[in-house]
Length: 121
Image 1 (cartoon, helix red, strand yellow):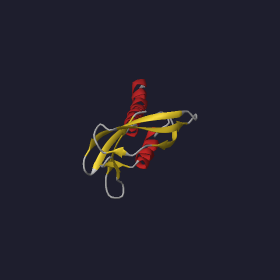
Image 2 (cartoon, rainbow, N blue to C red):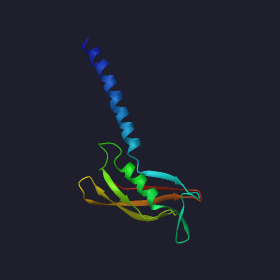
Image 3 (tube, helix red, strand yellow):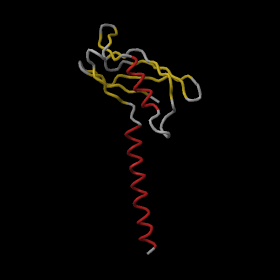
Image 4 (cartoon, rainbow, N blue to C red):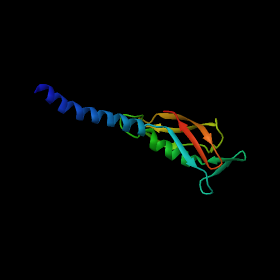
């Protein structure tokens, strides 16, 4: 009887924990792929680039997606991100304690129509 009771409690708890782990993994990703089209493309040194405002907005929204992931960040600003694999820029922002943050951003992959990039927490 006791064993059945433990199983009836243990299984739902395990499901919640695994589900929470999967949600955390999905939400904590720092990589993004963004399309390059006429309305969302800048130019840096003659190369297509992702405007800094797009990089900043996505970084700010993904930096602290859940209370147990990352630090809350505000006022993120980024330079335009050249759509060339290996390109690195540094964004800036402020943590919830007002401390200045530097956020490294790197282009992982670039094509003529999109750029995949990631930031570091």
